[in-house]
Length: 287
Image (tube, rainbow, N blue to C red; front, top):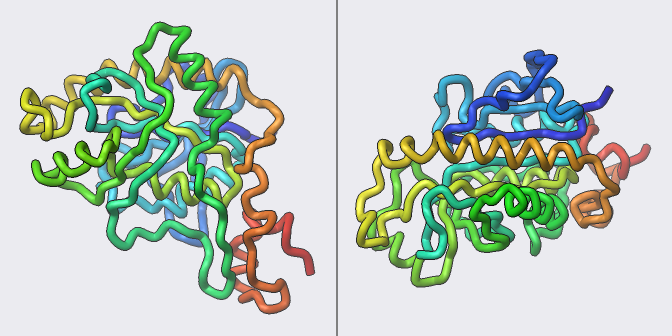
């Protein structure tokens, strides 16, 4: 049976404790190795695939992540819905540590990360005005609210390069712009998921106020780790109950993002690239 639901666990969320019938699956991709093996199994009666974003033992920095391989792997497993959980810093007073923020926008402050499957003889341009799946985000909001979690719907996620945390000047700038949360990983996942026509939503698990806040003027690993354990338990509960609601009919733009996005005529496509991207473009490109 095809696995339709994927989960990406970020800092502190390295496993889904309630998964049963577990099996590790190694996926080979044209883009190299994913962060690690996918753990497949059952969660609330649904078949799911879980990937630890930073690899076994948290070995990979954000800038070292092979985002293309990670998302391509989910696509080849059959995933249509992808839930991500990530530790984030708060840029606004109202988002307190241990809250969940479900962003609906991104601001890119990364440098030179590869965030497309295309190029190498095939050009495509997907719409990205609304970069996260609204249906999946709403489901997460409803589940978290019902569980009594302090959760916020909407907001802008600043994706910074890292691995260092922000300078005070940067943190104050983003805060003054009205940005909401800051992290290091989710933008590239969202871009690639959209190209792969996978519904993607992220749970921003607030660990700290970043360094703009007078009471939190120095972000430390110890501070973050202290909140990660609680955040991870909350995230597992929310993800578990969202998974129970799936699948549903996909009427969002995520499901047909490539329908009008591929610019290159089939006869002009580089043969090797066309072969490699078959799981992604196959339904639109015919001989």
